Image (spheres, helix red, strand yellow):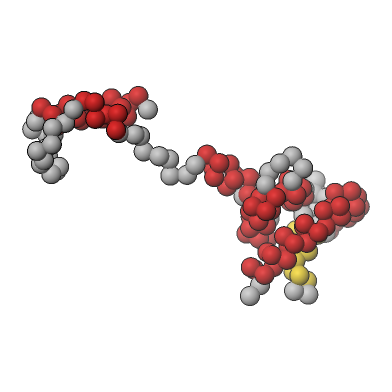
Length: 163
């Protein structure tokens, strides 16, 4: 901010003293410029607030390499963040966590469902994703207690995604 204020002070001094370059491209005015006018000048505001940057970072798909449903995951995470916030016990973190573990969004009978990556696809970069056995444990312990909130998120997303 100091550089900005110093630049503004120099500019006001140029305008006040009428240097040759000072008036180039600026409309002339009879107004007297005072160095105290600097107090009325504030630095430009950032285009995006810090909270918005944080929201954008957290709601981006943490597994964008899983391209088949990456856009849906970004939207699901944004909905979860919007509706439930980012508190330590928020559904948002649960949904983000299962995506990190390779969960997929699958459309069946007009409804979106959360499912694990099939065991047959768990090779190479996907070998650490949740398998069917681990999925059952995560589903029972973490997803089912929040099924109402998760179902509402999936329903809202399905309505957006499927016209």
